[in-house]
Image 1 (tube, rainbow, N blue to C red):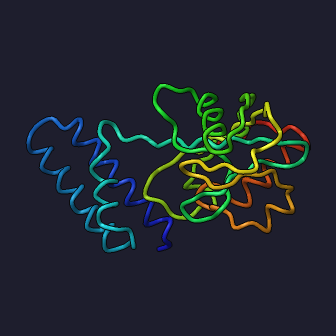
Image 2: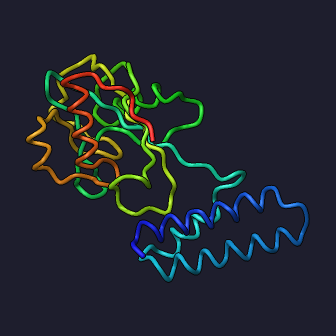
Image 3: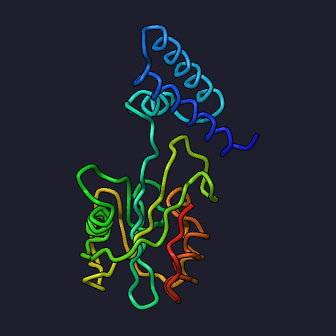
Length: 210
């Protein structure tokens, strides 16, 4: 069984346990779902290379009915060049973005992430795609994720020459050919994402949704 399939099954088990602990009818249900969560934790530890602390955080910090997390990615062009930011965590390049924050709409999050990660203002305009991460060529992940790609119009086309944010160390506009030569953060965006984005830039496409 491949890594992505294992991660998806573990994610489903965690979701069953989490939802069961929330809506179980009595102490016996609670005991059963707690056992499922413990077994899922042990399986995750034996089948993955994730640190034990990270596994415990993933298994224990969420509550309520288990639902997918939402990853927002902002798509910004200056002429035919696409805005990317360099991640401090591993030196790879990605579309500006991150997890959806409570209290903000998807468009507001896209605008906020661009300002925080690239230090430019923009105006969100159109939803390009909603992707179920498990159904595409992203690396395996225990977290079940929906990815939103939102087209934004920049209010500035010049990125400050020297800036540094909490999460990023650089930003720039790149051509499609230049992006193919960059080390990409494939957990955040893949080659097929960029093919979709540039195809829409050349000719507007229908919104993609899995």
